[in-house]
Length: 488
Image (cartoon, rainbow, N blue to C red; front, side, top):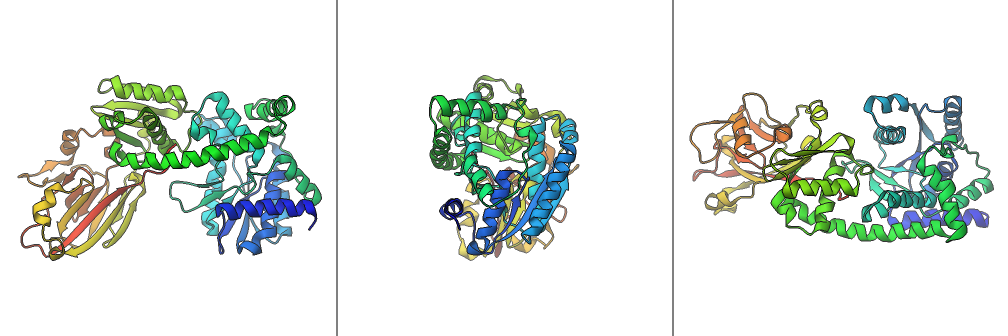
């Protein structure tokens, strides 16, 4: 190896090792556009594949935005992968149609389509990692763009070197080139005689990012700091470390503030939220939006402040519109951030799962996991006298009165139950009304069913059916754990 290649490969190796990006046996999908960054990424990972004990698969998405030029890039990526002896998945998606249908920008549409493509390709290939070619220049541009728009610590932390691809956490995105500059990447491509293509849209002044890249950063390098890219990249890394620590502290607060979260809405206790420091309040609002949209690009300081103002002084039923077809609404002492009515009405699918006993059952629609275990009543002799003090996210039942057909689903028309301690039955709808549960989130609340009987409306109401009694011998214990994800 020559000195230039040695240094480049050494930097990639260092990033992977320092952050634990790869483990032996990992299968890695490498996103390759055909540009110098992704070509250098693929080649360097190919050089290091045996050292790290990983296998590679190439993925290329044609966004159908640049006609024959895009088709030629797709053909080149296929040839490059073939030359390296690697499998390759190529797909074409009309991003313009996608953007028009969803009323979003071309940039956002391209990102959505691209990450969905990576997700599907990784699943098809059994891959646990997706490697992308973002570099120090991309990091500097991102920090500057967010600073110009106005941002907090999470924005200044820039592009993460490692992050989950989606909420499941099954696939991880890694960015091994994040500490390398564009000039270092171009030098590596030249030394290794790697062919690459330049996307004409990356130099068009129509896009703000391109103006930052080709106008603002060169100006800063020339007149203020010749190493501004490295300075911004280092700043992002320092802020990311602080952000990770603070986010952990915020997550510790979520269980006391967040009453429910699903794909459609996040519901918070206003009294609990308002007791927190303003910094925590803002982060939890941003977290709620990120849970629904997956990103915070259009959600700015002014929007956070309007939501907090609604929580503090809004009346029941008051609502405000938010970017990305979201809305915030006050519902008694609850703050609900949700998809707007017209969007929500299109997205309330039924769900139903067989409950694993014993075991864990994931309910992705409700962002909840139900854990079931069985024990002898003798192991917990005080249960009968203390059961009324049980946390809302736990429930106990007499296993001897339950058959094996236990399911968890959302509500159905005509659902009724006999709440624990009450005579007669009650409509589930009336339970929701009594508990002041918003209509927009009722379809997201899991209901545990035994045959035709409701055992438990998770987090809200336990049924008289199969209740613990003096004659109980074996107990079915159910516990709901809410997945809160990351704090934005």
